[in-house]
Structures are given as structure tokens and as C-alpha cells.
Amino acid sequence: METFQAILTRYSCRQFTDQLPSERDLAIIALAAAASPSGMNRQLWRVIIVTNPQLIADMEAEGMKNLAAFPDKSAYDRIMSRGGKLYYNAPCMIVVPIKTSNPPGGEYFDCGIVSENIAIAATGQGVNSLICGLAAFSFNGERGEEFKQRLGFPEGYEIGIAVLLGYAAEPGGKPHEPDLTKISQIK
Image 1 (cartoon, rainbow, N blue to C red):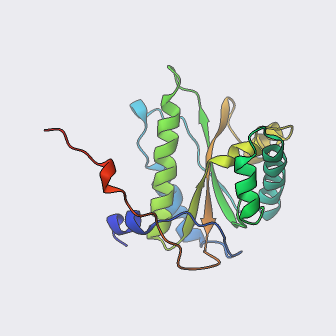
Image 2: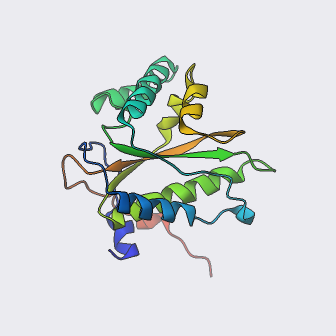
């Protein structure tokens, strides 16, 4: 698939089958992540492919528990209205831990680039995705350190983002309509 076509057709899949992407597809997607540019080429991120269903289930249960306890119930209510699954039954996720840069802040931009490379590469391989910022809730409670250890986070790294991967349970998801009013040009 052409890159521009992948950008235009990618959408946030919110209901996955249990079919794992092939090892070849995961290797291509991981390579796209590792090829991401970063500020001063510091690469203050790691790419961790998770296909262990029990680990994903454990992280989801902790994330939902922590999300339910969060004072602002809007995200929790939205997840519950979509079936109560933080990870939408995805059989695979790529977790992107990050290390604070000096000065701090740039690591978040780099993390965004990595997650977009993952999502576009996945679409190009025919794999659906969802960039999942709410994955942070799996790491914000009493089991956060446990999950960092189980995933092999390097010392000093914290959760950046996760990207869920798999195949849509209900094909035909629609990308959002580009809002061309958001574009301006200064000459």
C-alpha cells in the first residue's frame, strides 16, 4: 500500500479479533518504529512487542481498575460504553516506554512519532491499530512497577504510549474526515 493511502485509510480500531499479526508483519512494524527520527537522535524510547495474552489481560484489568478510580469519570464511562475493554480485545500491543530528556519534554514528541510510524506501517501491512494513551493507567497503580519489570523496561524509563495491533472484528471502520479548515498557509 502506498504511504499516503495508508495515512488516509488508517482509523482507530476499537474491536479486534484474536488473530495475531504474522511475525513478518510485526517485524516490519517494529522496524518502522525503530526507524523513527528523534530529537538529536537520542532515541529515548524502546519498542516492546507484547503478544502474551495473560500479560495483556493483567495490564487491562489493572488499567480499568485505575481508570475507574480516577476522579474524572469521562474516559471510564466512554470505555464502558464501548464494551468495557481498555484494549478492545487486541491480541498484540506495542508498548513504547520513554526516558526523560534534558531538557524534559522532547521525549513526548519523539514518542508520538514512534506511535504514528507504528500505526501507518501497520495499516500498510493490512493490520489494524489503535494508538492507546490510556495504557498509562495500567502503569499508574500498585502494579505499575511489576508491569515495567515484566515488560523489561530499561532503568529510568516510564510508559510513553501503547499501540494496539490486530485485525478488526467488524471490518469497514472509517477514518475521520480530514478538516481542511485546519490548514493555513502564510506567504
